[in-house]
Length: 396
Ligand code: ATP
Image (cartoon, rainbow, N blue to C red; front, side):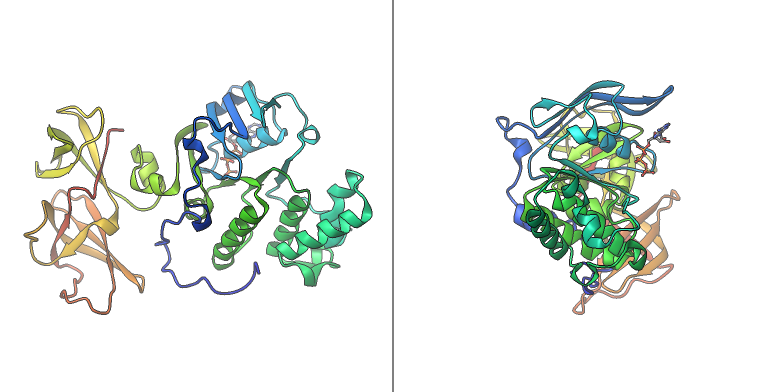
């Protein structure tokens, strides 16, 4: 299952935003009466005078596939390790299932299990023995252990390797053993630190869907740490984007992509064009932005709290920008530029266009067979255009 081929049809770098289909309509965070299964309350962690996690308050709900996302060193693993009990918060509380776990050791946290980045497999034990290890430690009956191990092995498709030892397995297979070992304990909350880090891109894409399937079929709450934004977008019900120990946005993948709340989030998730300007008019839910480079007026949707003369950035995803050789007559926003680079990716083409101010913008065009427009080439003078609802105004 995990190593099956397939899933190679999308162009690199242009993964669609996908929330897990079976979970559509699943949004416990919107239900004020629903208690979270995990609550971080003003949690900070300092190592000496370095603050790795900075006053985080966050609720995670039962059956969520929750992703902690951010660049290396932003504090994701530290937050996860505090939830597992391997680090103690310097300040704040961590409530799991209504119980304050802040001072508890990892083994006291019933129902919470962590899969480590390093797998931590026992080299002298077979796959089966490794998977059953935690259950034997718990003193579970032999036949119950055998059933649980068989179930976990089937779930990660390791049947053929059950009697091998870790050194006889590839990195990806070892990762699956670690996953099976964590699953076998049937935790209510599974913590996964970069669980697919050892897999190549194609296997990784496939394994992401397998993880989602396992998470849905077991009904476990998954909290995953990743620095891979595509991975978070693919698997997660919600994503917490972190920066320097702080949460900068917690939203669904779709909201993070379509309505980022800051330039940091917009740039971290996918590709984006940022056009700096000043608000010159706000009227009936719409705003006019004067482009800082040349005063061109961009028409866009307004946002709450926007003020006249405020400095803003108009964020535009490349797929929402149209590139054409002729000036569009049917679009409220357009800028002229010259094509300086073209990236052909099969199903789509990236056009990098330089504006007279020197700023570069990117537009994507799908390579549909029936396209009637003339091909845009390197060095062509072109127009980039977008409708007023395509952009998001950012104030920070
Ligand atoms: P990565 O993706 O690289 O694993 P991360 O976001 O998970 O990064 P953390 O491992 O949480 O980051 O580390 C956050 C910061 O805290 C880093 O600057 C790291 O050097 C520091 N840090 C983590 N553990 C310790 C420790 N035991 N002692 C001192 N500093 C630490």
